Image (cartoon, rainbow over all chains, first blue to last red; front, side):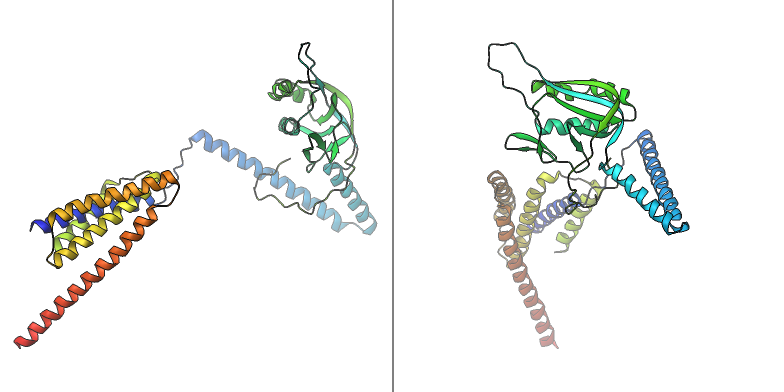
Length: 236
Length: 121
């Protein structure tokens, strides 16, 4: 009798442990812990995206209508116009407008120690560009290099290359076009990126300029390795 | 025999009703412990059927097996080797062997009962 009880207790324990393991291995259901405000914000964001998409579809449909309703000559004209527009968007044309001019200068300290002449590291430059785009920049050019969507900024043998060409040593000028240049400048003046530049002994100066001219991107655009992004949010 | 199954069901019911969950980190430990428990349980049933059951061996075996398996997992985690596989392997093989022996014993019993029945007729 006693042995039966012992075996039964062992069975009880085994069963209990097995069930606990089973339950622990069940996938935990993700709880939706957002509050009303967060849900509302998300709905608003999604609606905005939807609206944008509708606008884009509408524009594309209008264009299509125009293509279809016109005769050959006009159609060619229209196509040329479209190509020109797309080239402008891709950064293949010279562009003029209002924006800010950024000057990156070296900070030379009066000290006994030998100071190296500062250079702009590529990560910092990328950060600056990202920050600019975040705060509403439309087009950027550094010295004579237009930054387009696939412009590489990288370190080649210790030198910073933009668009596969070495960047001249500081001072360097960056021209940025934006719809609201003043706002962009105000944002950038308080941006943390200035501190990061200061760590590298570089000073960043901003200045609003109403007549900026950005050069065109001059190299061949190689789209062989470009794939469409999987995510639903499109970048600028 | 029935008591064992009843208690097993009670154990499962208790586990389901209390809704205890353990962190994923310790899932390996529990997995090996469960296997050790089942191994001891099946071994106990086997020795019970073979009339070789020893209470002390059973009780000490139950706890030492679980502790040893846990220790093996712990050492494995520290060394970065999946040592718990060794425990699973050993217990798994023993589990199968014991179940096979239990099956044979039960079959023998059934045959014996039938023979008895036939001879009575």
